Length: 129
Image (cartoon, rainbow, N blue to C red; front, side, top):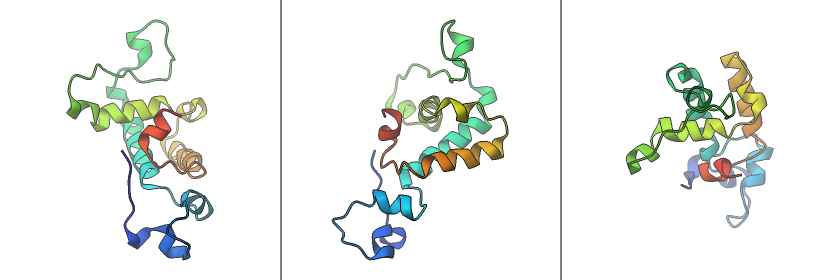
């Protein structure tokens, strides 16, 4: 899943560089989250805010990472692309120091600071990196 920004907020048009140039460095310099990073941020905040209702791996399996959420078996394409499923996968791929933050506002701040220098162009790039 790749995202394309409209010209209105496209960093290329804001800075006036060649359209063949990669925007990755511009996103970092301008402190702008890519659309994929925004999705990662929002879905992770949703999972974090409502994670009490989701099962943790430690509740399902004996030998798993304590802070990870349980990813359920995916039977349909709709469920595979759902916010709960994708959010759980994204949350499980966060660094441990982010998962250990108890305060929700501090979590959001640190998550944004973590995402800004990475400039992910796709959710898969984040999940499988």
